[in-house]
Length: 395
Ligand code: PMP
Image 1 (cartoon, rainbow, N blue to C red):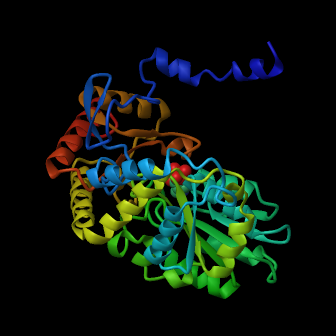
Image 2 (tube, rainbow, N blue to C red):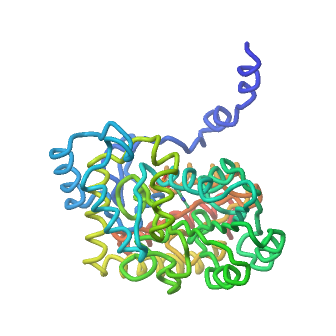
């Protein structure tokens, strides 16, 4: 056994969970991700998806992808910098810039590579990156890839953010990077206060709109739009893997920033461009969101219904303000047990354990989509209430 093998052999948590029959990962879905999916011949209600707009199975989105694949082929065989730029990439970038309210946008192959490629490229050795301690892993990795000094503030604690800003030298770049909607807890960043601090300390703000797009703001333009603060935020990042029913990501900002990133962001230059199908699907999803505000209205209707019902049933749901509803369990093994039992009973939800949260904050994440019906939500709540009671998580 090599030293590496010996070390990795100690990692036995997955096997232990499999032996107990509570291993929750890599379940195979045998079809489109609607509100109901089939897994191993077993039908379950899907409350574990990030497709808040419910567009991944939409015929128009699918048709747009199929058409693009016919016209442009299956892949681009190169990076945007060289041979990988299609006219539809450029059109999508223009549409995204207009949608989120910035001068220009750049599309990347995934949202993860936006954060990991953009963040380190905006700061040098003399500069600072300041993050909320619950920011997404892609932001953490972007921070790690930089030469800047990294500072963290306690989740949504604006006094702590100010303390961190006070540590920075006045002439440096101070890049505040924050999730607009926190992906596990569903609460929002305190953007109005962050903007005030930006002005006081001459900082720069990047907001990750992964979970805000398609959910908040006019036609789903995101949390910055919802707060009316788009012009105060310097960079807006988003992903296509959630509300835009595809895969890919983007950064939007003023012309000067985009010009720099277009020629320097390493994950943009040294990684292949998004596939024609993925690009066309995202474009169609944006078109639908702009034309069908009723989708957003229904998403909020089912969200508000679920929030009310979970509270009535006595669940602990934290400070969520979005279609992401954390159901706190506060014990790792029990979180897996809840997930497994809910699955048996017909509900798919996601367990959230460290490092995605603190050990005492384990939860299952229940997420709504615009195509859920009130009846489906009610069925989901009732099944989960039964499971949580049986396992003594709630009374
Ligand atoms: N930012 C946040 C807040 C996310 O939740 C995610 C995905 N879970 C990403 C970025 C990365 O996006 P993608 O899935 O497109 O790589």
